[in-house]
Length: 526
Picture (tube, helix red, strand yellow):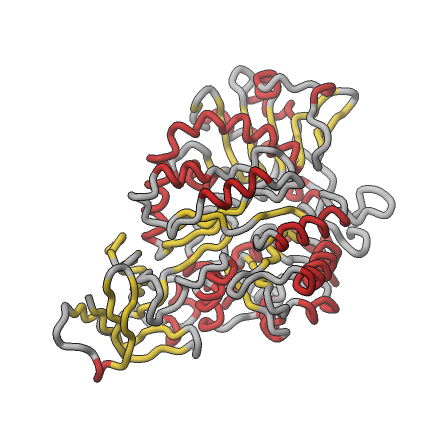
C-alpha cells in the first residue's frame, strides 16, 4: 500500500512535505517526495489531508477510563458538596453501587472536605462511591462504608493518605493511597467485563487518532495499583491500541521482574515502573518548597507521600534493573528532588539507548529548577488540559506568585527538555489529542476564556505540540518503533482533514480525524 499526501508531517524538522509512504508487512518501507512515488503498487491519494504518526496518549489510567466509557462510572459536575450529593439518586446502580467521578475538594473551600451526611441525605439505602476528579480521593456514604466493613480501627496502615475522622467517626472522605485501596475493592467486580469494555474503549480511542497508550499506576503504595496486564493479554489479537503499562515500583522486585519478563510483545509490554512523590495541590498533598497560600497548619508545605530517601532508592533500583521510572511530581519541592535523583541515577545506572525516565505533571514549577529538565535520558510528561482544571482556585491554593509560573511548557523546551503529552484520563474526560494540542497552543478553554490566556508566555506552537503528542510521547514510553514516519517504523498513521501547521488555533478544534491506521491496517475510517 502507498499513501500519497501534500502534507506529511516530519517529526525531525517539525514541518510537512508533499510525498508518499509505502507500507508492507505492518511497517513503513519507503518514504519520499511525490516525484519518486512508485507506480507499481496500490496508491491511496490523500490529497491535502495531513498524514501524521498516529497519536499517543502517554499517560492514562486505562481501567477507570474504559469503565467510564462503558457507563459504569458516571461523570458529575458541580461547585458545591450539595450539588454533587443531589445528583446521586440519578446515578445508575451497577453491581450494587452508585459510582460517580468529578468532585474537587478545593471547589468547596480550603481545607473543606465532603462528608457522608450529605450523601446519606439523598441516598441512604444504596452504597455510594464518588471519586474525586483528580482521582486522589474518594467520598462514601454510610452504606458504602458499611459494605466495605470500614471502621476507625481497621483502616489500613503503612500507606500514605488518611481516613478523615471527626469526633471519633469516619467522615466518609479518604485521601491518596488509602482511598485507592478501597476504590480497587469496589471496582474489582468489573474485572470479568473488561475484555468487551477494553475493546470498545480502544475503538473510541481510534476515532481520536490514538493507537498507543501509556497505562500508569493510580497509586504507588496500595497493593492494587489498578494496572492489569492480563486484561490486555486476553484481547491482544483483537486489540486496536498498543498498551505500554507501568505498575507501581516496590521494594520487593521479584513480582515486577516476572511481569517484565512476561509482557514484552509489540502490543502489550511493561514499559517500566511508576511512583508518586507527592499528591495534589487541592488537598495540600503536593510537596512545596514554601508554605501554601492558605496553610492548613503552621508550616504547611504538604509533603512527600513516601520518604524522600526511599524515593531516591526506588529510582536507583529501577534504573539498575533497566526499567524506566515515571514519577508523579506536582509540587516544586517534589520536582526539585526528583530531578536531582534522576541526574544521580543517570551517572550510576544509565538506561540503555532509547529508554527514558519521565517526570509527570510538573505543575508548580520553580524556575530555578528549569536548568535540570534537559537531562539526556529524561522526558517531561505534561497534560495540557490540566491547565483548565480548577484554574480559578490556583491563586487561593498556592498563591499568585507561584500560580503565575505554573505549567511552563515553552520554558521546558527553552531549557532543552523533551516534552510529551498525555491526558491523565479520567482526570479529564473525553479529551482528544487535538484538544490537548489546542490547550497547549491557546492556553484557554474551547469557549475562548480566559481571553488573556493562562500564563501567555508559555504558549506552544502547533508544530511543537504535535511533536509532543507523537514522537515526544513515544519517547516517554521508551518506544523506538512508533511516533514518527520513517523507514522501519510501525505503520501507525493518522489522516487529518487539514494541515494543522497552516491552520489557526480555532481551526484545530474543527479538524477531523478522517482515518487511523495501526500496523498498516485501518482501524478507523470516518
